[in-house]
Image (cartoon, rainbow, N blue to C red):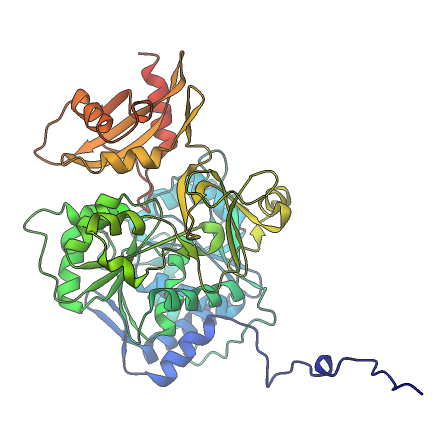
Length: 549
């Protein structure tokens, strides 16, 4: 007789229960910080100082006050504010109710703010009085006004109070011992972030508790952060929820140094006075520090400051110059749809032996996937077949894994298109190097096709930044009857420098194939988003207008 077969795999008989399984959420990070390090400094803003015990109580007060106003699972609470304590506290207090935090870009116009509030169905709006002009107009555009709470920050410039009460008064209505509960399912939404919407209405990107918890820890692992970092908020909290750093720094019981305005002098001052160890920002922030006025630039730094940069491909020259000042740069890459950074230019010790210029070129690459991200590839946009790892063949960049959004709110068509083939389509174009590191070459909409040849605007911009007179540079396509398109460079010069269009073109020709060099050079200030990204769609319009002059 044969041996009887067991109908069920014995491993499958061991089921999850409350003792061995809890849904992932970053909300537990603040509970732990307050329990283990109650008296450590958690938040610093001007004269305001809060310990982790006090901060946890304030977050619970916020959650309790919101719950009393009917906020619960799946309800959207919007906040429009700079990097102030209330904005940080909202990242915990709102999801403690089961609600969804919708952090809004503070530089949007009234129509865009109104669209976001209506599309996201915000039931409460927490807003800083400095932005009351825009918010007031936005509220008038809404068919139904949400509950409005005012942040009355002493550092705010002009502005009126629009709401029912101030934020501090609102906290007073809440219970510091509010018994919040973790999400029943880690797939539950925690945040709603809107894309820039440069070609129509912005799309609402939805994050879940699982992804937020994982990427927060992924930042720690990727950056090699130790306990109690002192983090300076140079990155807007509204941008991908501050790349998940409200939760990251909290997990490490660090100190959040709030920064209302990104100003070079104030950054150097806080680095010296508070012992800043970490900060994030777009390359434009690094360039601002490099070119700070002599009376603002306080060097040498009292300690090494670790900088995580992303948001645009950083020119190698910028990376080289910022590190000479005592900053240690880690280059990451991601999108709103990937909770911010999801790839990193992981460094190899042997690269330290290379000349600084070569190190900067390597560091400018976007690199490899985050430890907690599952997949990253460069592939054919239609077939999803990976391109050769030759550093030359251009394809689209794709992500896959737990730190990819749930999808776009109320937009199943865009969600389906973004996830076609089981990968997230970024729309970014890049190459795969032989060592498995990716390098961006352009957004698909930014690549210039001149006489049938592809020209990477990032490559041309990298050369322009090497010119000693160039402060900022951006390259876009200008329509051309003969070639279809030619490169048009928009340049901001450093103070006190003069250079001609012919000088710039000659400089590029000494570093690039001639067909890649700008045919037109325009000297002007560059339009930017609030996160430091140059608005190329504005520059493309300007380039097209040149043909009409």
